Length: 309
Image 1 (cartoon, rainbow, N blue to C red):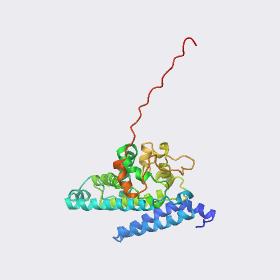
Image 2: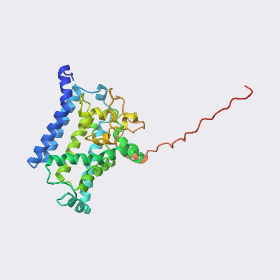
Image 3: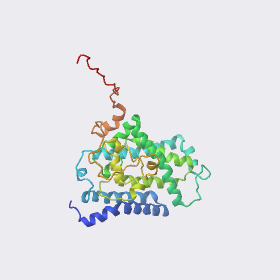
Image 4: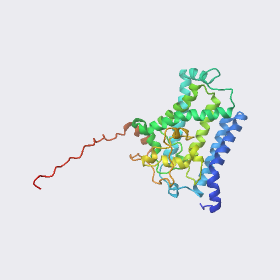
């Protein structure tokens, strides 16, 4: 596909991220206004995906990332299994009665949530609160080897594009849902706020993984932009173990993990472990992979020169 003129490319690189995010948020608000939030969200999400797919071809951030890596089926399968697992857990919770305890926590009278505040303020609070759980869940998944086994499925990609946005092991995804929405539930946030946080996270997640040339300026100080997330997928842990925020960078600033150097992020991304290519093999990999034992560091032998020398 032919590239677009340079001037138009520069213009689009500045406006694409804020335009798509603001437009999708406006569409979501309209969905709530007409009492069809799920339908409107789905339409907005697929329109965003279509636009980004086209832009990935005409103005890619890295042309190499447009080459086939043989993982398209695995990416889609992980996405579908992850979404299906979350939905199944919700249904199962309903069957065994867990929702009888959880639902009242999202009703008026529970928790400390200020339900009488403007919805826009509640949504902002919801993003900040949920982000705390998402940040630490993500951080621990990088630092604690038992959780890294599952999170490595996502980081094993060798290119970023919108199709591997949802490439997560279902256990990794379930952990994020529990930590993110769990905080909101305990605080007594209404279901509308939880739906808003979920929608914003979905929009932001697709944008952060897209292979589209974009420029951000000050936005990268506030939000998890593709610019920041490309560093996060670096093999160099000095760069990769940074930028853990899912939507906003507040907690990265608080805990000192925000990272964005004035140079181009690496094109060679992935993990140091060997990930099998097949979807089923990848599902099993975290349970069967064995790391070699750590070799103790020994002090070098100090030799003493012979006195006769």
